[in-house]
Image 1 (cartoon, rainbow, N blue to C red):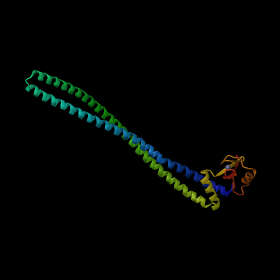
Image 2: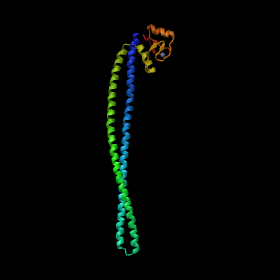
Image 3: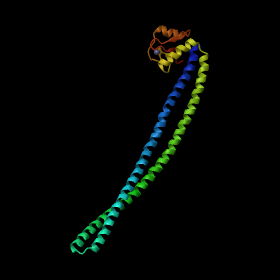
Image 4: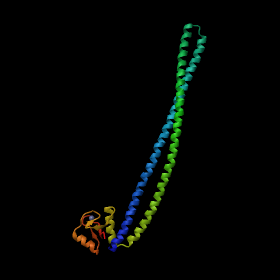
Length: 236
Ligand SMILES: [Zn+2]
C-alpha cells in the first residue's frame, strides 16, 4: 500500500469518527427539547387542574351568596308577614317564603355537589402533581445525562482532532489538500478500496488503466467516475 494512502486512511478513520461524534452532538439539543416537552405537557395539566379548582370555588361562593340573599329575603318576609293585617298579603308572602325556601334547598343540594366535586378535583391535582414531580426528577436526570454525554463527546472529539492534526502533519500538504476537498464534497469516505475492478465509493467499474495504476501502487490514483482515491484490495 502506498505510504500516503496508509496515512490518509488513518486520517479518514479519525475524520469519520469526528463526524459521527458531531452527528451525536447535533442530536443532543433535540433530546433535551423532547425531555422538556414531556414536562411542559404535565405542567399544563397541573395548571388546568388548579384552574378547575379555582372555578369550582368561585361557583361555590356564588351559590353561598345566592343562598344568603334568599335567606335574607325570607327573614324580611317573615317580619312583614308578622306585621301585616291582611290575610291575602299574609298568604302571598307565605307563597314567596316557600318559593325562596325551595330555591335555598336547591342551591344547598348543588353546593353539596360542588363540595364533592372539589374533593375529586383536589385528589386529581394531587395525583397530577405527584406524576409531575416524578417526571421532573426523571427529566432533570435526563438533562444532566445529556450534559455529561456532551462533555464526554466533546473531550473525545478534541482528542481525535489532536490526533488528526498529528497524522495530517505527516502527509504531503498537496495530497492532504486534495483529500480535504474530496472529504468536503463527498462527506465521508474518500479513500476507498478497488475490489474486483469496482470502486467501493461509487460502486462503478473503473477502466483498465485505472486498475493497473492502482495495482502498481506507484502514485495516488483516483476513480474516474467519482474522483475518490483508490487502493488495491483483494480477498487474499
Ligand atoms: Zn468511484
